[in-house]
Length: 477
Image (tube, rainbow, N blue to C red; front, side):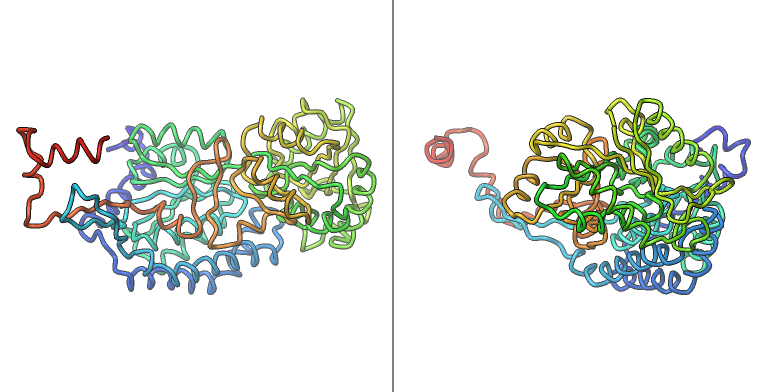
């Protein structure tokens, strides 16, 4: 049907058959009621609660080690809170919006109705595979769509567990989970979905957008980028360190909105290093066998991070490994949290998103110069500013560009369900979370209903009627 390889590959044939079943099911039953959508969301809530320990164990096996508590907070708690938020709001979101009708169109009524798009695709990354599957899924269900979810090939055990979980509560013509790599991953964005949500790297996002464009499929891209931290000279370093260290260590820095690098006031570098190191030692007295500290996902990502550090070292940077128990990490994909000073912008770790437990430090003397530089770069997914002065905070917000901003913390804005989440420019396009998530998964359909009375007869040709004179004299002058 869609891909010649389907003739040779049973997996691709099955993928396309699933898509066709969902299309047919949507054509047969294109509109779920509010009560049905709420039931779909409640089923997801119940399944996640039931299977959370199994999902955690399978994901930890994929990682080598994934912190159970991080998983339950970042993947389960935030996901469940989001589902609760959707259940609370879906009836209100579904209501048609009344709109104004101009005088020349009267008498008439206008409204906007929110229709399901149809069959939507969700492409899930490996770093938060449950939350980043469930997040788009809940909004797709709230909007009344049918959904196909492509899980990451880097987390195969979790993918199978997630697929089995959803198979318990949804028919495959409603929600289907697709696993596998290679040709399956290549074919998925080529299907003529009514919308695709992709979360992942900028490079893969370009490929997804290119493939989707062949079918004019709209895409919602959640990418990443180099999210900077900017600390004002008046801000207590110990306050910044406590919040920044927590965020940088979360999932070993493998978070799209993780702080990528930090700008410190001139002269504050050594104080920052000392207090940051102390904060790490307090949170993680050991790292290697500490259940709270997560591994780098796989050898490929581990080698990439080590390559960045080697490049920085060769270019003269100072590498500061924070290893509280002086452990030997040989044979493990766990990495000590690492600070880098003496950074130059030509280093690989300043050219690429880091996505790991490495934090480059840069000093500055003029905050406006930092903002100017940040604005000259591809727009980041998040910007983090530390300052207690309201006027300066508003100045930084007004004079910077990013997908989102958190002031005096890192990453927290993602967990606020009522805030839209997404990037801008190179860090993504489109938003989900909040009401914007429902809108992203819906067709805002304009409806104009004219009355029995035909007002157009007063302005039809010939154009010499009194109404024409009124329009020219009073409306166009």
